[in-house]
Image (cartoon, rainbow, N blue to C red; front, side, top):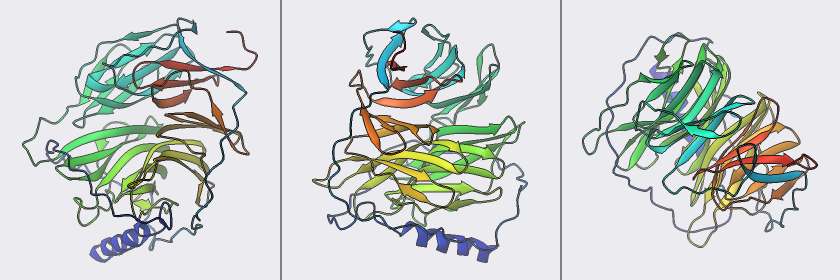
Length: 405
């Protein structure tokens, strides 16, 4: 067991030391930001039954080293439709509420959606307009997902987990009490399910100056602790942040985030979390954060994030694509912050953040964004309509060309 653990740690160290995000550009490393954050009380450890045998060795995925390319040319204009702020069944002036900090949306049906945000904010869309609903917490909520009209989940600050039973939201897992200075605080950043009996929450245990990735698994009746992701030896100089998750089956799930400044891609094989190399896994300067993951199938996965450059280097959006064998850099045009991705088909992928871009199967197109507010999430309703949520309260609808307004 000790030898196997050390082997995984050696492999993890080798993988995270791979390709630079933007080669041949030199500047001094950025220091890891120090954030005074609250403490964490360790969670109990339920019995974990592996669903697959571990591989005797970890085989490194072969992938191409990205090369320096000329400055990107401007993307052509997207002409397939128009994004509009939408409420009460029609296009409206875009709202902006500085008191809101919205995070994610999810659809239950074509006429029901939910949104969550800071300070326990929960709102419901009834196919016509948004209405805020009573929340059982004042903790920040970072993600929401529904498996059916009477089975919804939301997660966030302090490790809080909420559940919707079709009538009301309740606390399924209590948040941790505010810890003393220098301790740990657990924050769930994302939740995802492959079925009602297989789900994941992922996040980070923060402390002053560091953080370690953390996951929990839903087995249909309780949240349990699986084998955790191997952590860096020094979480203060090499913090690990888990930011989004997608699950396909009990034997296949992905988590994305950031580790030691590089973009992090991890795969669950039914027994262990394994690091899978990507073109932005290691940096000589700056930091790469992979924020959002979306999939057409287990063999076609899209991830979006941001490269935060060093001194004198602009921030640049990142998109990578898993083609069943390796991660590929999709060479975004020049853009700012990217926080969301939605992959509907191989020729219909949207990313959002400071801008909105569309992948048409051949290249990127830039869409007109009707508000300067940052897009936080992009989702599709069951009938295929595409919607987006902005940080300060705008609900955007993609109206296809030729559709009645």
